[in-house]
Length: 71
View 1 (cartoon, rainbow, N blue to C red):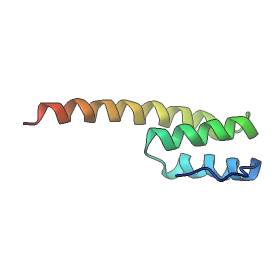
View 2: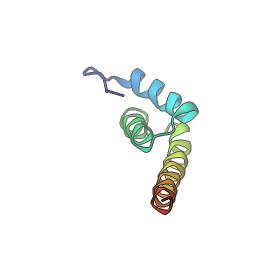
View 3: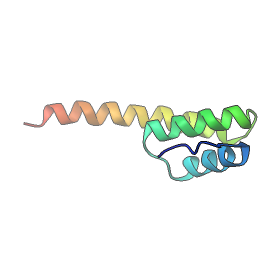
View 4: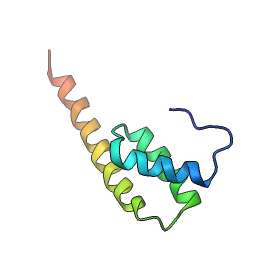
């Protein structure tokens, strides 16, 4: 997902909420969190994005380890 060149507060807010509801890739969640933090640092979705990011990273590491076990 590419960030538009004129990324304003409304886009950040929308992207943060969208990623909180459907995002699964750590890089996408991190991008949304950073943008939301920049434009709406007290938004309640930030804590949810932090939690999702930790979980997504943990799942990604687990899947990476499991892929190395399979012959």
